[in-house]
Image: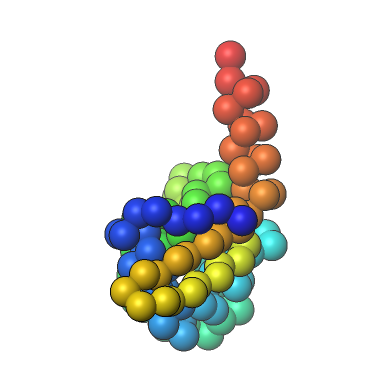
Length: 118
């Protein structure tokens, strides 16, 4: 577990955990790379909501783009995963402690990809 120091990151985590659809998205992307279409189908979230919330989660660093694929007809789409495996929040008189466990599989894949660059 790592302690989150950034107030912005703490607020992002709290905001995501307070939103039922964002929790569904994070759960869906925890163990495997997902596309937006996968999330829409598996979580039964409306298209516009899924795109908007996934973009927000990526911008806030709570989802990580694992890879970008191109279809046979030349369309590009991203596969993403949850950046965090678990989160623990504790509040004690004006002090909020947020601890998070990184999604190790994502860290390993990104490290592998980085080390394989020539």
